[in-house]
Length: 262
Image (cartoon, rainbow, N blue to C red):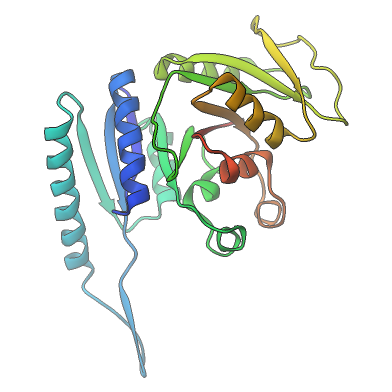
């Protein structure tokens, strides 16, 4: 059975993400691992920082998580839930779980923030994009429909789909049981895509000023429920000062975005 890791922080955005992940679990026959990363509680005093009882904080979070799972299990018969509450950072923990093949997909929420707030307080889904091998679905808190029928797969004209990447993409399509359409956005500085992919893939070419605008417009036109992006691995300085196509799309999209590491 496939396992989907769902980030939980007990907010409304988190509740929306869980509900979306449950729909995926039902459609794909997967189980859900609800994951909550704790922050070591501290208080400031005149003499410095004092760390509070970490065990107590963890037990409280575990109880809240168990109560959540009990409620969800009653509401969604047949869906299997597991949980993990840890002080490990989500990036390091997800990397380890993905490397050991304990999870197949990560589902994270994205709270509505201004651009400056997002720059100062980097959201988890943006932090993880291009940093881990496991695919990540980012769900905006504004997205409430939770349809899982059609996705568009954004591909580039600069390189072919290598066998390993092509296999991962099609495995995800099979897992999600969604209709998929491969789309290439032709901007002013690009050439027409060459049909050099390793598998016979029908590609829809669309013209737009930039990738984000083109994908967003085509997603609305084709009534897509999910956009798949292939993310590059970026260094720390690049990630800090330059927005990749993936991050721009995640921040602006009205429908969920799934990032697949190249």
